[in-house]
Amino acid sequence: MTEPPARRLLLVHAHPDDESINNGATMARYAAEGARVTLVTCTLGEHGEVIPPELRHLSGTALGAYRLGELTAAMRALGVEDFRLLGGEGRYHDSGMMGLADNDDPACFWQADVDEAAAHLVRVILEVRPHVVVTYDENGGYGHPDHIQAHRVAMRAADLAAEAGWTIPKIYWNRVPRTVGEQAFARLHDDLPGLPFTKEGVLDDVPGVVADERVTTEIDGTAYAAAKAAAMAAHATQITVAAPYFVLSNDLAQPLFTTEYYELVRGDRVPGDRETDLFAGTGDIS
Image 1 (tube, rainbow, N blue to C red):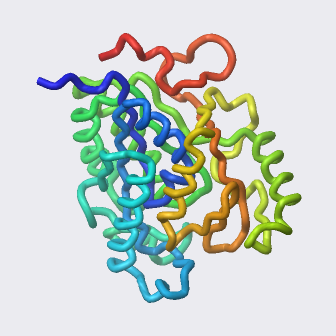
Image 2: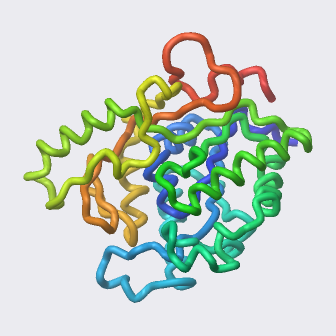
């Protein structure tokens, strides 16, 4: 019987592209180092706003199928082989932005029973037995219903998996330290005249920004900056990249972070300054 990789990372995201924006450098780094990296995406983003004019005819199921192709290309760029859709393709639909009528669709992820959705994720957890899980905070980073639901499902699945025999040693939420964000937007302001973008965003556009002291962990992914940029560019319906910056459908430029930040919310933190390895302290757990 083949021994499982010594380090196993599971990420839970709402839509295709979220993983590359938030964790692309982290995923590429750990995949290159031989860790098993598993991505679970909860919806296909059927209600995403499409940037390229030639693709704006895509919507609903057709857009979801196209975005699955983009996700496949992004995972190739990051070197990640294990990526899945929660409950299988088409099980949960994009819920749209908060407050829209799409939120009421019985098939959308926002309307899913949390325990039922978590049960799908538990099956993955018990198969993979991750040492580390990464997801969003209780607000989903910025209040999108699918992000909030992904948080709820991931945290509930962690509890249920523990009852079934696998306690996840460490759980992290995606973060950006406020001072890092402020510095990055200051550089963007200076660089904007030389970019293909005409408008700059603001720090409030970035999900998961918190006071610096909340951040427990930073992963230096600068060696994988090109892989992250390529993965983000693969999501061409949603993102336009001009590294080290990008825009979403709102046309507001924001920084592309290649050092990625996290807050440890479950598990033991290694004493000292910020961790530089998500797996710190898990070396003796099989």
